Length: 199
Image (cartoon, rainbow, N blue to C red; front, side):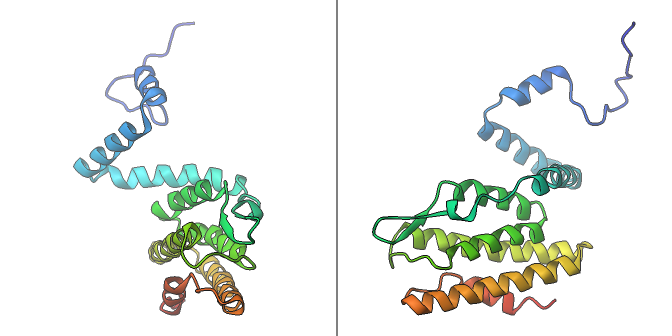
């Protein structure tokens, strides 16, 4: 059977040519990031289609990829203090992908699970755990901003209200828990951002 000929003037949607696909399969991830950033910076008209493609990809993956079991996000040492667990880094990367492409509500749902996972833990006043919690606090405030922009673009207000309510409850539980054992409440920026988020 003869091969179908496609006019070079017509884009082949959803596919790349074999050589470009070979390039994509083998390029170093840092080089690929640099190429994508350069393309988006020099051709801003690509940004909407890039974001749409990224959202479609993440929407396919996100519902099918359960968050790691909460106890793997943090681990307790023999001293009783907690440390970041093996699953936390990958979970935060996945969350940043969500809110970075405008899926802030979905990102906040995952971040709420992380806040919940900290309740009942203890940590040293100065150390890796404090640093990680400060990063998570900043992630939540960025995800809230992403969620606000998502709502302005027609995102689900009902989902945003549900997510914000759950996050507020988790933050309140964290505050009460850290006060109980004398720790420093780690989500102060989050609490302030939630106070100013009027839904």
